[in-house]
Image (tube, rainbow, N blue to C red; front, side):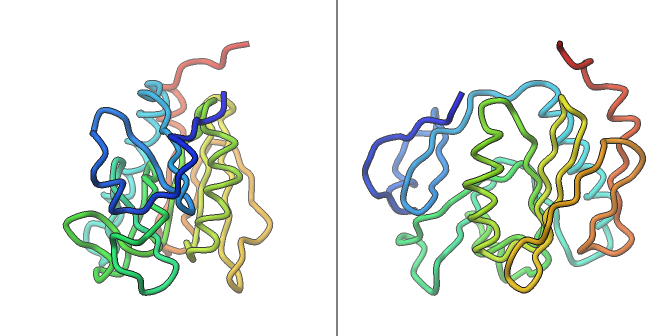
Length: 197
């Protein structure tokens, strides 16, 4: 199931702020994409566990983790907030530059973005959002697939994402941009629902 567009109009963050809260959207290059309905328990458990582990690991460090929904405004240059046409809500993110944080969320590329894949969002996260995060300068992008028990990791190299690393949700996965920080999967894997065949 593909995500639906709100309409065919071009939108900015100023428009986005006027929309009702009962339906959530992300803006990508001015196109409003309706976000999927409430995610599965596995999705929430994975996102929550990753956030929890990052929060503990970064407790005495300058980098701060956040969990959705948090608006991440990705300007193309120095345009004012109202004119920004890309606003996303990653499942989990880490920001190491405090100047990017304000009461509305984040302005500029997070250092780490984690998207937990759902059937309705997988292609959107793999294609559109990967391109957006690469262009914005996200240093590390994780796509976590709770059903297939896999993680795909992209790291920024010379302004582009290099070849992805693919691993299982087992043992520990180090966060490349955060020395000494890992995400441990085994206890989480025991809690997830068995795959459906």
